[in-house]
Figure (cartoon, rainbow, N blue to C red):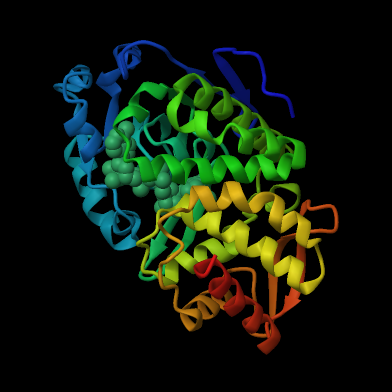
Length: 361
Ligand SMILES: NC(=O)c1ccc[n+]([C@@H]2O[C@H](COP(=O)([O-])OP(=O)(O)OC[C@H]3O[C@@H](n4cnc5c(N)ncnc54)[C@H](O)[C@@H]3O)[C@@H](O)[C@H]2O)c1
Ligand SMILES: [Zn+2]
């Protein structure tokens, strides 16, 4: 899909009606002044709260729940504390939850919005690239229970999303690459021409905010097409899990020490490699995508990913049984497609070869 001309909003259709993604210029969080803070409770990434204390001054006097955004923060056992603190901030039916942060804050607020007081409206100010370019649309909340990642969830779209790419300036560079991982993914799903285009712009993506913003819009437009066709993830949308079966297994096998979008980047590379070895996609497809993917996971290629833990995690993936694996692998044309594969010794050997080959590249 061609990159759309600059427009300042995208309207997304959902089962709850349309919601608008607005691209904002100027001072970050300026539009908080337009929110009805008298009937809102804010859930704020604590780090963002510290970095943008001045810009977030409109929140003075509002109820604010600050959360340190790590993977443990979206664990079910933390929710009693969140609920108690929101109730202490006098959350009421008819109130709005304002989420300010990345994917972790999003998952927490989206989940709470589905169940707190039988449902509240929520609005989102995404502050990470991953959240701006990918997770902010699509309605999903995903909560961890113990070590089981994303096992609880709902489809609860926000009422509105406000994106200001200026806040990305304070993001750790590795978190930028994590977001780029998801952007590479949707472009790969859109087709080889789209992937080649974003891959060719990989350098400017890291250094030029205008180029980055152009690809954020393009990524959201590609995702929009898939989620509007299949909001509840039973058909066309499932290809969005490209890179995610292996990616989640890598995250789990390394105790979540690899950012999500970096694990997804490795996951796509691994899916392409495995597909080539199993004969379902040409080796040329792996080789075509490999340079951009490898650039994006640079520094993580020497990480020790324990194979037993990885295969165990892969087997536990929601979609799988002990003997068969449902994976999104590229097909003969290089298009990500759903298939079922045998979880056997040969598969294990191919996975082992992947890590050996990347580490020695
Ligand atoms: N629900 C969905 O559709 C969906 C989709 C993809 C990912 N996710 C989930 O999102 C989570 C990852 O989210 P993420 O990658 O957005 O990161 P994150 O929310 O984990 O944030 C990463 C780090 O960046 C910090 N941070 C956030 N904004 C910042 C800013 N502007 N400046 C400086 N620091 C900032 C945070 O405090 C945190 O330390 C994972 O749990 C993943 O499972 C959910
Ligand atoms: Zn993802």
